Image (cartoon, rainbow, N blue to C red; front, side, top):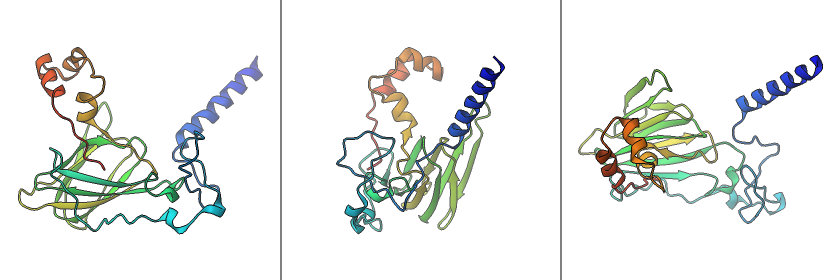
Length: 226
């Protein structure tokens, strides 16, 4: 009986340790270029045969030097994400990149990256940025950034960026610690889910009348990612 209890304890300890360190799969070879033609389902992507790997697997003519259109959505921003779906060579390397364009008074609204920490650098303009810590404190840590400034958003925490200048746009570059960081925009997820979350649930959660929830759910929740 004692041996069984000890074995169970060790097994749980190993499982807890694995969960604590689990992230993007670490490379066990020079590279593991994603094979987008494979029908095998794995956590990530199956490796292409190394004999078939070419320089183009690590390259994308992304034109990140070119301004993006920030008028296609109501929030006034445009996120151009470069991840493993666009560069197969990023598979297992645990990194991706994004250019973010902000219209005057535009924002990248509160959102989370469930699989990545983000480090953001302002290339042009000024940004008011911040993130909120987890329950129970929900502390807002925020800062006004200028050209050349850098700010970090820890993995999984709700964060945002806002261009406070009513006349000039802003541009930032973000690096993220996952080949596929994911993004959950809070307003879109809560009020724009398909099917919709019950207005009884949301009215109680936000302590507002159901007609307010119904009005919010009736809005057109656009995605600023492309």
